[in-house]
Length: 430
Picture (cartoon, helix red, strand yellow):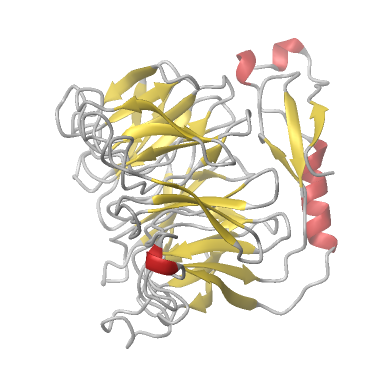
């Protein structure tokens, strides 16, 4: 069924549709869960499928700070923060599920550099991403790249419209992309939320002022109600960061200000679960006394419930967001901690963890540097049922890795995109 096109249809009456941003509940969602539930369980296995700096002069790049996206062709696409070949400013790469890597593009600075964020595959089939610095003014850029590697810079930030974008873009149901910048904007240092069209026209929707949050490090998620939800790493009532909601037209509401006991510094974005609530992580804070970070749940109206406080041996510093698996549980990473606490400077090399919706946490894998360390990025569940991710350092050459973790979940199918306007064409992969 890979790459076959279908057309979305609806049986809902028009009065049940919330404008053109109606989230279409596909039968494929049920099929995805049925396939996963009926697949036979298998033993948990972890495998490093690629270690960066494997090629001559490290032309394959290094330090993949961001995670991966599985494209409609079944391959994964991602970025490295550094490239030690012709330039030192990062790469875009393609990697097969078995580990065959191709470097598609090496950044040169003028077009952007230091892509800390991952990519998003648009409905056109091309990928869109951001760079942390570089571009025409040195404050970062937005780019698009074809699956074959042709890159076009769409926008260069000039500080007044934002500076240093860290978070990945999200393509909304209206076809435009939405994102954040960590700094810049009308209020100087607090960052922005912006919209950019596929052709590159950028509109600043909101400039943070500190009291409503500051430094949005992660990208946004578009909820089923059409609004966007995100986090800021600072600002708010207690200066430990916030959770916010923003409409497509730019009206922002601060839903929660962290107070450290319920978490601090949410570097990661949110995921909306099948129950309608959002789940996320904070890099520090919690009730364990060590401040190793938390996992939390928050309702669309802003009621927050801490689910877990890390203690070190089960991980610490969850820098990335969560992914909800076909089992209904969530999977994520921590950038330090784990069972090997004596490794990586005595703080542990990081973990992959699983947490249920009620907050029961287990650690399927603890890194030991040889298989990677410092996983700053989250995971993606591929349509074969396994999880794929990256580590920023470690591996055979200490420039980071790509890894696969199988936990016994079966294959499933997924649409690209997962939602859209009624009548929109989608592709099926898996």
